[in-house]
Image (cartoon, rainbow, N blue to C red):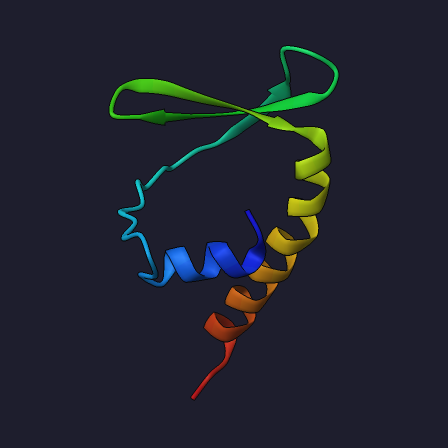
Length: 78
């Protein structure tokens, strides 16, 4: 999924998303060397996502930029 598609979906584009809030997320080795696993607890169950390392490498910089932007806007005083 491209950054543009993710933004469109998160802002109510073609598909309405209902995000599930999570308090914790863990990261671990995947089922094979080409994947990394993210684990979170959702509704009393554990949800594990095996993410291809190639996609994770693309996702990392975008995540860092988004978190930095959101943190900066929250820290600004009016």
